[in-house]
Length: 287
Image 1: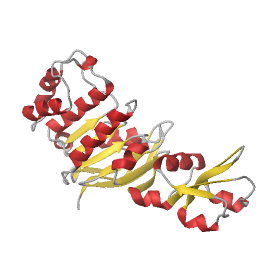
Image 2 (image 1 turned 120 degrees about the vertical axis):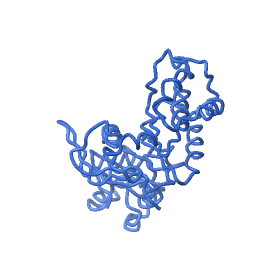
Image 3 (image 1 turned 45 degrees about the vertical axis):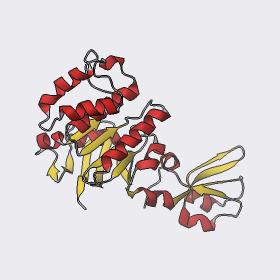
Image 4 (image 1 turned 30 degrees about the horizontal axis):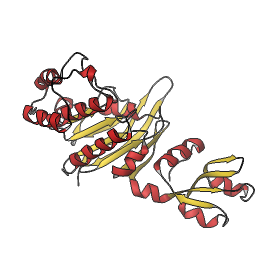
């Protein structure tokens, strides 16, 4: 199994933020969820992959090629879906094809027409007439029509309702059925990733906290809750993102440590939302 995307020791420094030694790999045939709070470094990392920003150090390889030296070839094979469509408002969907087709050697007009029909998008409609969900489908139709092998999505579901997000999940699962392809999906809506992601990369304050199989991360942690006054100081310290409120406490604990907790502590399986929240509250590190 080869990697469709690899980052090794990638760093980038700004006046008030730094991306530090970022490393992760996405094997072909899988979906990787890229999570972290706003400002953690997700979009910066994506811009570095696309060579929209120049890294200070490290290596980025896409399809086994250096992302900068082979940028032109790589971008022929990548589909990028952002939180908004950067098309001229007055363009019709036919105009979108006319503007983009010359830039892609593998553009397939028949496939574009098929995807517009499949996604219930009227070719005569103008971009400004599309809803947010329809604009998202348009960006995906463009990516699929130039035979993209790697989809990079940066917060595409922000502001979408549950129906539109579910439609996107179905589209992505159809795309990844071809085991030679891959998806890097950056989002703060972690419930979407729990449905479809195979791998999770978690970034916090510019550093990778975790990057591996999603289920391993979910199995490692449990959410704990209980009444006040039952934990020792040492037990409180072991709970990531420990918080007290009027009726008790809550936080995140490694599943291996549950046996050391009082019997009155309530536990439930960890989820991505709680993991991101608690790690940011407690500034914890995955080890």
